[in-house]
Amino acid sequence: KAGVTQTPRYLIKTRGQQVTLSCSPISGHRSVSWYQQTPGQGLQFLFEYFSETQRNKGNFPGRFSGRQFSNSRSEMNVSTLELGDSALYLCASSPQGEETQYFGPGTRLLVL
Amino acid sequence: QKEVEQNSGPLSVPEGAIASLNCTYSDRGSQSFFWYRQYSGKSPELIMSIYSNGDKEDGRFTAQLNKASQYVSLLIRDSQPSDSATYLCAVMKYGNKLVFGAGTILRVKS
Image 1 (cartoon, rainbow over the protein chains, first blue to last red):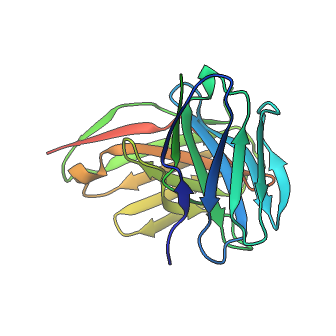
Image 2: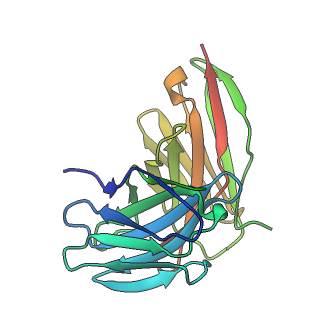
């Protein structure tokens, strides 16, 4: 099976812009979770989607949002970008009924 | 107190030795635990999961769980230079949320 895919892999934006990141889970996986990884804060949970519904949300401002489509693909959006949003954004998918999460390669976002 | 704590390292071991990586967690009700490996510039890669007290072995890797002591460990036998990476301990919380430790840097010297 193909793994989790994320696009784009790299992105450079300027402060105030918005960005949309995409994630395609492993075939058959319906749960998609998003994480932010920074050197200072480590890996932090953003949100989790299952069957197009957000089931859980981390402690991030409302500028961070996401959605999931009927084919389980997910997008996350960050509006009004800040310098501190520069990070590796990771998507992970899980098979139904299992807790194990498999990560994609990530999208590295640089905000200038 | 952080929910998941790991020694940041670096932990240096010679090639062929056993590397021992440790992790403690604060939520006594936690049931599911995971070890991930992350190479520099890459995404986390699942090594193994553990749910029950005791040992779980997979090839050169052994995970150990002690819920009474709120302690999880990962042993890597016959360490290789290719094992040099950051090892992340993660605990599953409600709502499919993984909480990660800061990671331990492992360096295997040939």
